[in-house]
Length: 122
Ligand code: FES
Image (cartoon, rainbow, N blue to C red):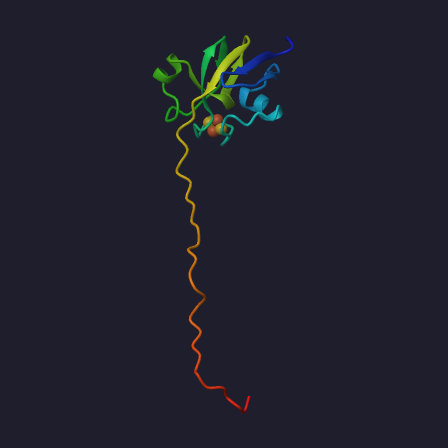
């Protein structure tokens, strides 16, 4: 067993991936939150990356999120990606869903009806 492999993110940052450790786990350990984390089990597809350089093996992934053509093209799921040499990768996650910013409209306080009269008995 070696000392692990260097995983370099194309857009900046790198970390050491220990033997047997997934790329996603290594990035998380290094505090590099450049790839979305979901199920961590190859089932949701949010941690999708593309390997630009290097050798690797992959674990079981959901075919709904990574088909054979994707794999052929170098796509992989980081939680199921294990380097076998130093790697250069790039985040390739699904587009983030639109963030719903539900700002409360500034509306006046609920109608407070006031009679023009002051009740002298209260
Ligand atoms: S985190 Fe869900 S597939 Fe990787």
